[in-house]
Length: 261
Figure 1 (cartoon, rainbow, N blue to C red):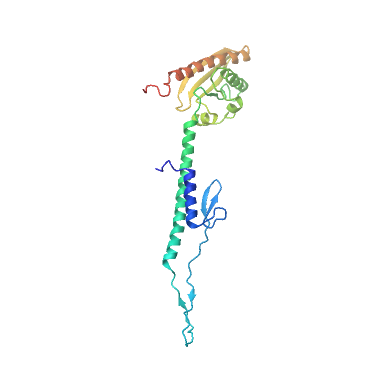
Figure 2: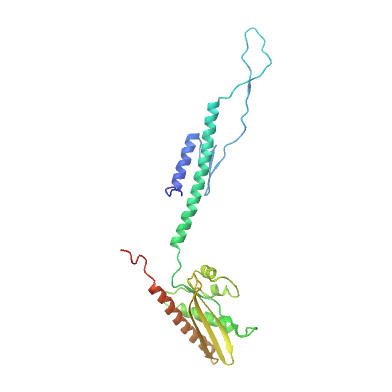
């Protein structure tokens, strides 16, 4: 596990020390260049070491033979330069990798601990028309959805996505948890509309997104006299049942830190 004392400043200090050791200039780098918002990279020119022939000293009174003598490189000097450069490259890689890893972990931890969904956030998915294959009552189902969204949004403390957000998922077959995550809610309400003779039956369900369990469900039968009044009446009753279920869970949940002395 990386030490959590690793910070951008400590990485900067390490790179600065390496540059001083190598005699490098940050503005005109020879070994280590700064890559904005990414880190550092090695820019040193690399080439194979070639031994240069050196002519032997001329002998007094004798002709200089046409023979090349290989001057042995000074191993200490080359070894020290190579070790310093290799160490610089290794340390750069280690610090940059550690910085990126720690930065991402810190960001993920921050996002996980600070971003939370309100407990009273609930979305209404478009109600389904189950009357006939022609979906003759789809307009009533859509009106029922909008009426319920408007009624729920009036409850103090409740967070309800707008109809445009809810209707985006109309006809889509997605997991409950995924829909709730995209809408930023804790609960989902779905339902259906059926028609039998002169009676509408509207069924509604409240589902908790994290486990998919149905917390509350009810169905309502209303005569076909005034569709707007029917939608309003059912929306009021559904909102009342949903509110009681959600507030019951919220009030019964232990407060943070409760029970610890």
